[in-house]
Image (cartoon, rainbow, N blue to C red):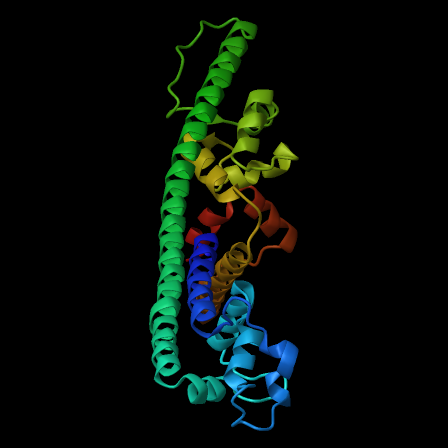
Length: 308
C-alpha cells in the first residue's frame, strides 16, 4: 500500500509540475534572470522589462523538476522565496485570475482529494491487515487444537502399547496366565511404570512436541497423581499434560497462591470448630511425628471422623 501510494503521489505531483511549468515557467529562449537577476533583487515592481512574476516563474518553474519541487513546497504550505517574500502574492499580482483559479483548484485537489485518497488507502490497508491477522490467529488456534489433539492421541496410543507390553512381560515372569489387554481408558500406571514409560524415546519426543518438559520423571509423579493413590489413570495423565504445556506464567503462581489461601482458610475454620468442642470430645492429642506419619499414610481422615 505504501509503494502504490507513493507512486500515486509522484504521478499527481508530476502532472501538477508539468501544468505549472507550462503556465508560469519561461517560454523557449526566454532568460530574464540573465539580464535582471533574481526576483528578490527587484525593487521597482512597476518595471516593464524585469517583471517580478516572470523572474520567479523562471527561478521556481524553470524546469519540470523545479516545478514539481515548488508544487511540493506549496503542498506543505511553504510559499516563500529565498528572501522571504511570498510567491503566491507575486504570482497573484502578476498573472491575476489565471493564477488564482489554478492555485485554488490545485489546493482543493490536493487537500480535499489527494490527501483524503491517501488517508483512505492507509486506513483500508490497516483494517485489511487487522482482519487478516484475526483470520491468521483463528486458524492458528484451530491448528493448535488439532495439533494437540493429534499428539495426545499418539501419546495415549504409545502409553497403551507400553502398558500392555509391560503387563504381558510381568505375567510371563510370574508364570501366570496372561490377562487380556486392557483398554486405554482402563489403563493405570504405578510410579515404577510411570518412570519407565516416561523414559521411552517416543514418549519423550511426543511430550517435547507438546511443549512439556520432563527432566526428572520420578519428581513429576505427584503432579500426575493428584488424588495421591499411587496410580495414574488416563484422565489424570491428559489433564496434567495440558496444565504443564508451555513456560510458567504469572497466573500459575497466582493460582497456587489462591489455592493455598483457600486451604489455609479451611484449616482455620476446622481449627476453630475443634477449639469450640468440649475437651472430652476433642480426642487425645497426638504427637507431631505421629500426625505426620498419618498424613503421609493417608490415615488422618478416619481419626478426624472419630474425633468429630
